[in-house]
Length: 224
Image (tube, rainbow, N blue to C red; front, side, top):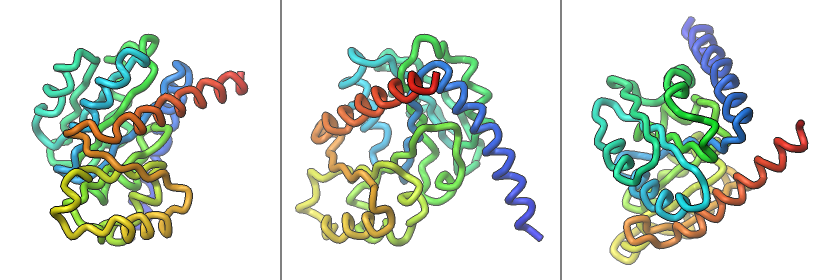
């Protein structure tokens, strides 16, 4: 009896996500849904990303959190538009939440919107919000078993970022095993290694964003 209810929820969400996606497309914006567990380093990666890209691309951030605006405060220090969404205990952002705040952004003046989702490897996986891609950050401190334990989020992602590689020698994280499992789950998955707090590997990630933004512009022109 619960299945039709879940289908209705996802169906409604997907409908609004489609509207959000159309709005992003209309303005030529690359939208990235950034996922990962609490403490994986999503916000630090975002801060480094802004520092690398703010002279090349016009960025804005939508921050999802259960109750606080601590991450939004951090992002605001980098002088980019940032909007906080508090889910009041909800374990993920959904398309209606994102739709509600898009009017607060000047979309004509943006190239990239990064949506930092609530810290969770389960709930956000099945909810699209209008993004061009999902990107999942996995800290090596979480363990190399996480791809097989939480396969859906990696299957739905275009990129997996293995973060905090600077402390790899001090853990029992098996990098090759993790990469093998990720590729088994999603053979086309892009895998990147970063130590965001040390600004290691962030340049490759930012080059990827530049490339994806350029590809989107070309695709939109072809569709005119």
